[in-house]
Length: 331
Image (cartoon, rainbow, N blue to C red; front, side, top):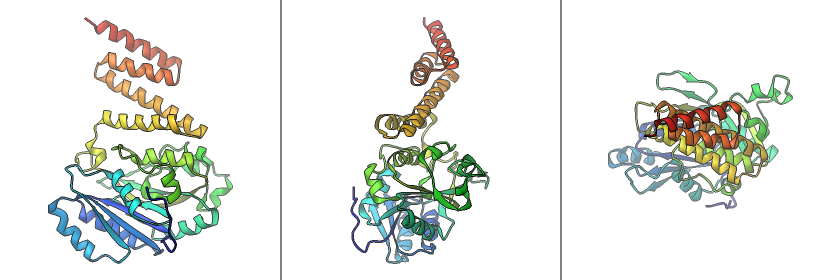
């Protein structure tokens, strides 16, 4: 992975992976071009767009300024995936700090990069986390999806809240109900390379996966209270998005992979503790799903694993109940 920063390189690289969504992509690209800070390079990673959309992408490409570069991946039936596309974009680029934007989302704060550069240079932060709004296709806003609850976690008396951007501890971020989406994150190239970039095996919640790995290795994190992006929540009735193509059990398995990686490789105690609790909750969720299907033997297996990770009397009784039900169902 390209971890080298050359002289006279732009401060920011913005990477936009896209596939078969030229209209949405155009809105995303325009939102980046509207930024007040202009020392940026933009890499559009076209993940094997099919022939029916190529002309529309070409029209957009022909109208782009010189700092917009297109990287075309070979066509595959399912594409290479967002994680592969993002890593390819990082390898091809040279900016000191890396930003990502999904092709169906937009940046809404034109001062986002200008403000971030000023704050990063003052503090030498290697990770910058802001907020975004999550909106469903019917216009309903979903609250507390990301890390917008950090001010309430810190409390009204915390002096840091007098500023819109301030340093935050990993332990404070881990108390949030959510995690930072990459649309609203900026990471130094050196830190991104240190954590080995995106996990290309992840087809669900890759943002959570790299978020935990970045928290584990970051030396200085800035939190921006401003909402800088608009995230369009995927329509569950459609299967054009990776998160809607993946069924519930597959999603839980991807989450389990994230938790296991944290437990195996993290350096910080607070990240380890978080991943331990996260894994316990996932295993309990899997057990509950199997229980709802009356698959007591499988439910008992995952319930026992959850109990082994974190023992509680309540879950011990649940595990015994499931084991008994599994025995009773045997011929």
